[in-house]
Amino acid sequence: MNLDKIMADLEKKNPGQPEFLQAVKEVLETIEDVVKENPRYEAANIIERIIEPDRVIKFKVQWMDDKGQVQVNRGYRVQFNNAIGPYKGGLRFHPSVTEGGLKFLGFEQIFKNSLTTLPMGGAKGGSDFDPKGKSNAEIMRFCQAFMSELYKYIGPDKDIPAGDIGVGGREIGYLFGMYKKLVGEHHGVLTGKGRGWGGSLIRPEATGFGNVFFAEEMLKTRGETLEGKIIAVSGFGNVSWGSIIKATQLGAKVVTISGPDGYVYDPDGISGEKIDYLLELRASNQDIVKPYTFEFPTAQFFEGKRPWEVKCDVALPCAIQNELNAEDAQKLVDNGVICISEGANMPCTPEAMEIFLNNKVLYAPGKASNAGGVATSGLEQTQNAMKLNWIAPEVEEKLHQIMVNIHDACVKYGKDGDGYVNYVKGANVAGFIKVADAMIEQGVV
Ligand code: NDP
Ligand code: 2IT
Image (cartoon, rainbow, N blue to C red):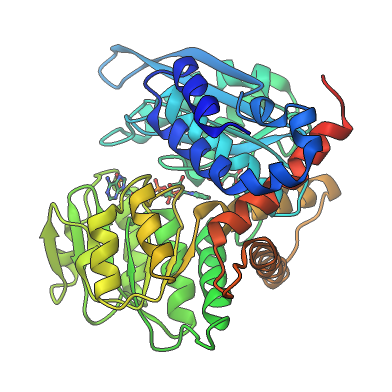
């Protein structure tokens, strides 16, 4: 495999899509040896085939705001690979959404979904719509307009979208309502649904819970637990919330959250009613984290800064891609961090990742550590197909077991000669082999 040539060709074909190139490069670098040792992959030209999405659907979304003005946004669905199951992945509504950004997320989703051990292919979608400051009625009209186009391309055995940044339970409700009206069928076409109409218990918490379960497994390899650990979390959305709940339950103290405006440091720990307040803060659609300090005055707000300067044992980046750079990584290492588990997708830059690996700290890439969200989406699909609902402890137990299995797979494929586990390599190799073998077995189609 000639990595330089593949990357140069990819760049030529996908100009202005740096995040997509970043995600592909990371995967290809770590699977190089496996491809070399297994000539069947080159013989079937798997690399070139796996980095090209099956299709990118791009559409106009027009909707009316509360002032009666017609707004136009772009909608997308990147259906990347369905070798091991129907396309599956979230929808992101955020002004930063671009085709390249969704290609990076759809590409990552292929390997993440493969790691869950469930039959799900990789996809991602969304829009450059900005939910910030929008009324409930505007959110509803936008979701309806978005689904009035997307419904043509999805289905419970075809492509099953879910939430991501800016898309939570409320948006899934409006999207589902429109789909049901257009298609006339009530089935598990979306996951993250309301618990009264097909949603799985624990799905809202699942990404964060899974992230903390994964961190716990990593710590175990060094004879450590989460009990008494100081944790820095970024973001204050769905994944941050779930991570904080589980970390606190397991005896750790979470001292930070962040937003695009800066970070909050709460030396007393974010627990109890403070965790519930996070939901209120998110629901305000205000896009800022500072109000936390008005509600809980012992906390301090650091404007325009990121939480990685705080001394902590464990860091859980749960906001957005490339939110933790080399300088941040060095600060964390200098302050004695022992474990980083990514709740977000690709939150650490390649340079930051290198610093963690070189310093042999426990470092989990999102495609392994945040796979609990999509895994529980898979469990929701199973419940929908069986037309029953599992109780919360049953779902959580299955989620926990899946995270332990993902951890085992990473150790199996990522252990270096000196015993250090390179979870990046482990996750990429384990995720790749299953998809690549399925592609070979299904022929050139
Ligand atoms: P939410 O919309 O619930 O929350 C996103 C959070 O990140 C918000 O707190 C947001 O604040 C914050 N944020 C956005 N930009 C920045 C920034 N530049 N600096 C600091 N904080 C910022 O989304 P999720 O919690 O669902 O998603 C978070 C991450 O987790 C994403 O990378 C997503 O892809 C990933 N993920 C999500 C899964 C899920 O099931 N939801 C599953 C697996 C991964 P604000 O709204 O104010 O911008
Ligand atoms: O990035 C992700 O894995 C998600 N946003 C969840 C996708 C899903 O289908 O549940």
